[in-house]
Length: 111
Image (tube, rainbow, N blue to C red; front, side, top):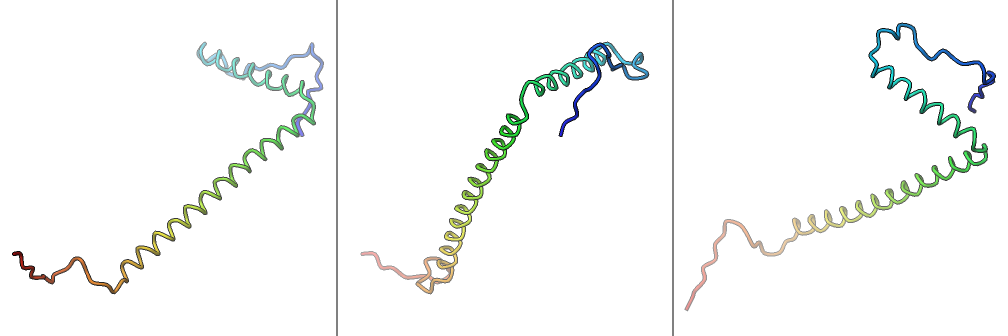
């Protein structure tokens, strides 16, 4: 379960890490942007009831499971086709019929 922030709104956390004076303005900017994004995610999570999040999680799991089943089916079909091709190749290799290639020569008369 997620933790709830129980601090009153008028209390603020010090998000400046120790030694932050050594950071470049760009690094400080990116750090504040990251903090803002994290707080936005927390705010949006607070708007959604737990049931919504639970159903969303289950929907995501079902969506991923559907693709797993689809890919497993494709893999099985490919394996079956490969076995058929292998069996056909083996049958051709073991065929005792006349050879169409090889060292023997056939004399043909042309009139």
